[in-house]
Length: 401
Ligand code: BEZ
Ligand code: FE2
Image 1 (cartoon, rainbow, N blue to C red):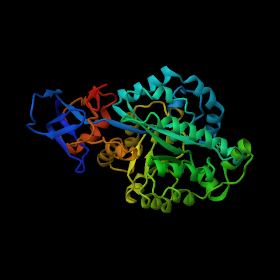
Image 2 (cartoon, rainbow, N blue to C red):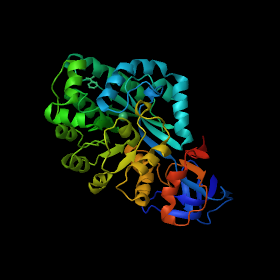
Image 3 (cartoon, rainbow, N blue to C red):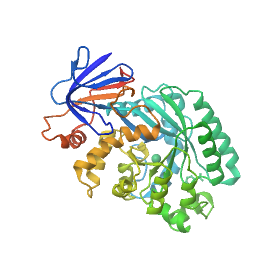
Image 4 (cartoon, rainbow, N blue to C red):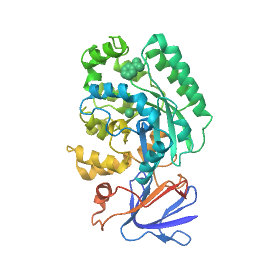
């Protein structure tokens, strides 16, 4: 049993309570939080913070070797460069590459991440991850001529990941996007996700090009499909795509160009959103309307996406970018929501028993110090986001990692 005491205990509980000069008692689970708890406490020092460890819901670690080889600034130009460099980047990313990607997340206080795996090559490196992994086996492919082979490959990967299922490794399913997967394949893998009760992630409405393509079969994607796939028609309407996810546990990634009706549908089917602000900025697709997302009562997480569209996997940097990007929102209240987005909301999306400091939750905690005293309690979330890059300690299931 360990009892830590800090100046600020950020619980992320339902009431969003921040306790001053409070204690957290835990073994592998949180036993209690508050004051005058039994036992000897370790005081973490002046301006110390204890909060739930962060959760990065959406990454593509297969791309971790990328630093400068992809073209940023325009979505379709970027996608073309991904298709050109993908194989090479995947081959280059081996043990050390995964290790340093995980290390960067770990330093920023991440205890768990959602990994989109398109090849399955990452499995041998991630099965020994010190962080919790939700492993989304991705299906991608629109060509009906190879649909069966694509499906068999998916099944083999999913099956292998299932053999590794544990408290810290959970298999899951990803449908790349409405424009890149054949609808028959969508149905097949959604059927499996329901049967196996595993979470789903799908990219949705990331770019204006996707909006134009799916609505009208026009725009830059038309040229892209003619070039790469000799296929000039979208295969599904956005609303039809969303309806397929009824009665599943799905997170839609990006949603920058989702319209009101689609957000309404996402809300109705109790789905959620993952927001990747740095990726959106680098691919120059615009900004998710967080106010609208909130008005539709859709819970959102913030995630880094992969090194294919970011310069870092540090989740504190990601939420700081969000804080500075969403200039239409009051920073004090946005900061509170952003801390929720990388803790309790992220835990709910990945179906993990962490993300808040409450009795019975996994003891996944981080500790760090602020550079000074925060006079107004309401300002604590913003100050945490402004001043934190790396944490001092990360506990996973009550153990320092
Ligand atoms: C495909 O494999 O069919 C595909 C991949 C990426 C974008 C669009 C389609
Ligand atoms: Fe992504």
